[in-house]
Length: 256
Figure (cartoon, rainbow, N blue to C red):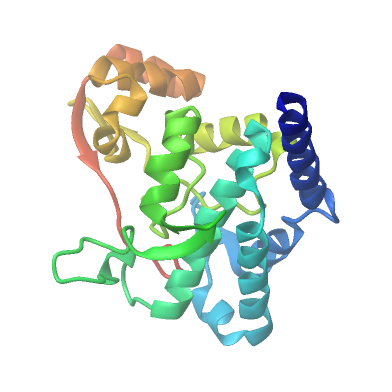
């Protein structure tokens, strides 16, 4: 009985891995990002939601990609594959939400109830028979199953203040290097850390999820130093005092 069960589980893992390997399930997301996302001279990725919204074929391609991810037995995949699927699903579903709802200024304009602060509690996707919200993916799945600090560099909330959505899909084969690059890009950008005479102004992400970054100011500073380039690291060490947290909720669209 036990051997039969183990064999069945092994088959599920092989089937899920094979599904990912077929012509690379994330290729359509690459193509969509290439057509509709531009990295500006300021280092910020902006999504041309207007052009995407007007392109019926690319909206259908987005729906098909999301459906393909929803059909996977994600729980049977190796860790890096699971991370890539969840991060890509989160980002694709967020883009679909912006295309559908068309907020003019910020994702926070999408409020399913009077007291909502945004759409993150809305049930927007499914996986293995379970209906999921963006909050479920980020907080109940990814931050629990993976290194929580790195999750924040992988999921994008359609805002200027957020780490970039990226120009390519997340993939298991390059996951560690890509996460490292994403963390470095954010920490060394003014959105992540700005050095002032008084001390450090840093992203509010490091306050909202302080427990993921060491649990206190000292832990956050250690995290920032892990990814800071030499010049920034020297400035942080010279005055490792956090004086302000900030975040720009403007939609990550051209013109913002």
